[in-house]
Length: 124
Image (cartoon, rainbow, N blue to C red; front, side):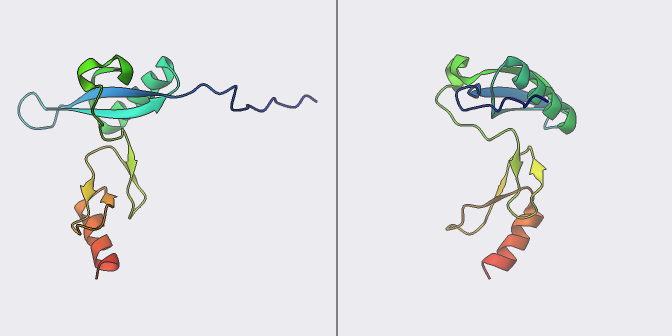
């Protein structure tokens, strides 16, 4: 019986930062709303799979995706992550995070309801 070879740090492919632009057809106006997100993937096919999976799950149209280092005008900006996890309910979400209303708190949430619950329990 052969043992599987364990991957070492030297064998692993480093992840690149990628940007993706989506259009939300149900967004504002007749054209919908366009937004950009960032994520990490080790290669083109992994990035492609990540983007299409997210687009299907969130019912979005993919406009483009590419490595951030090849994105000229977007190079020196940070974008929200493709998916985040709510600090309060632990659900994954792919839209803009709702920040805590307390100035000294840097927590972000998936919804206003989670933020209100957090404030009631944490900042009372």
